[in-house]
Amino acid sequence: MQNIIFPETAKRQTGGVGMRNVRGAKALSRYLDTQGVPISESTIFSLLRQGKIPHQRPSPRILVFNLDAIDEWLGNK
Image (tube, rainbow, N blue to C red):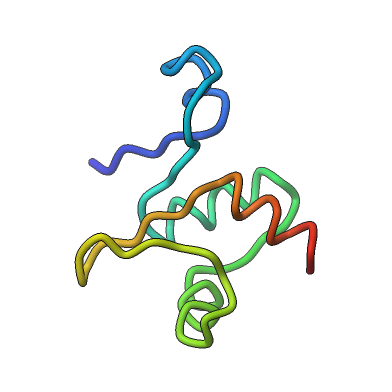
C-alpha cells in the first residue's frame, strides 16, 4: 500500500514544519481533487513530458511532488 501524505498529515507529523510531499501521479491527482482542481493521472503524465509541472525524480521510476510547489504552480496557472 502506498503512503499518501496530505498537508494536514504532514503538519501533524512534523509539527507544522517541513516539506509537504506526495509520491506518484495518483497521489497528486487525489490531492488536486481535494483542492478543487481535478486533473487526471494521464494529464499529469502529459504535463511531466512537457516539463510543465514541478516535480522531483530521485530515481527513474519514482516521482515526488512538493505540494508547496504544486500550490504555487496552480496559483500561476
